[in-house]
Image 1: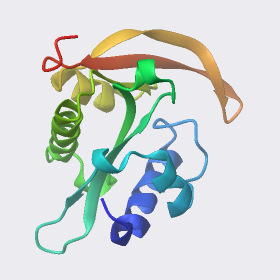
Image 2 (image 1 turned 90 degrees about the vertical axis):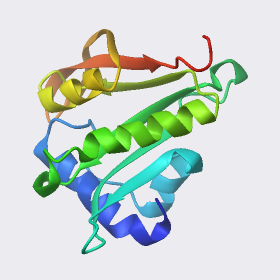
Image 3 (image 1 turned 180 degrees about the vertical axis):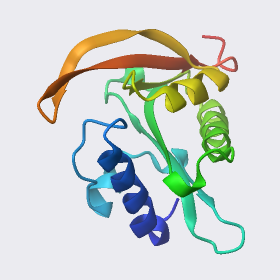
Image 4 (image 1 turned 45 degrees about the vertical axis):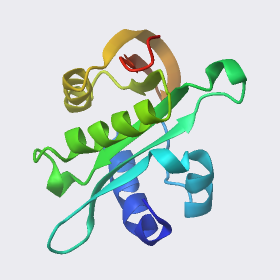
Length: 159
């Protein structure tokens, strides 16, 4: 993912936000804020092979600045609604997993709304497990929502 992808990445992010079951966020940030919050080595886009447009993206950020958590990242994956069901999310997750393992990351985590069954299934197929449910963790458009906390532990790091 590079700055030339910014407009399309943020548009796909906003589409996911607008659907209501992807995130607590209500608006995509500007590119500078987005880029600051994501680790450069763990940002990927899937491009349409003909048109070259962005079909989806994944990115991860550090969960803490404390050294003990240096090998733990939190990620997101978004696929344009018109490109879903074509394996793009799975390919993006595999790219993220590879980059994380190459960097010595031992845990990739995220939180998913229980209503987002497609994302839960995608992550389960990619080797993520449900750690637990954070009940009524945040208020989203006036409704208190649960989040299912997931993680994937690396088989490469021995941890």
